[in-house]
Amino acid sequence: MRYMLLLYGDEIETGKHDEEDMPKWFAFTEKLQAAGKMLGGEALQPTQTATSIRLKGDTPISLDGPFAETKEALGGFYMIEAKDLDEAVEWAKQVPNIPRGGTVEIRPIMEFDMDQ
Image (cartoon, rainbow, N blue to C red):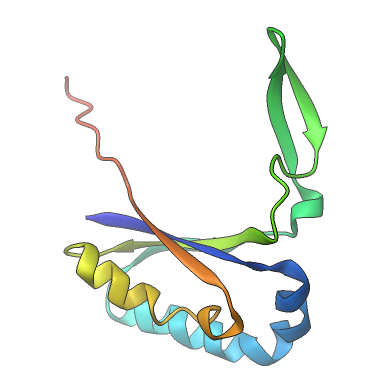
């Protein structure tokens, strides 16, 4: 089964530790790859670079910045293959942002039968 590991954290705090934490991120990514579990993943630019689309009446409008004001921002993701939620949880516990107060949200990816 495929799972998304959504990485949340305080952007200001994350920026302070980026350089010293990069080897930990590279090591975790290499560990996922070596185990054949990594399907994809990316780090995201800060929330001030975001653009949101929402409806105003019936018209979609574009807004600068994120939709929600929160302390924790989505900073990146890993898409992994895991046999079940327990295995996904074990991988998520190893994500380097957790010791710095970050959060990893685990979401199963919906599978659709496109042959119908």
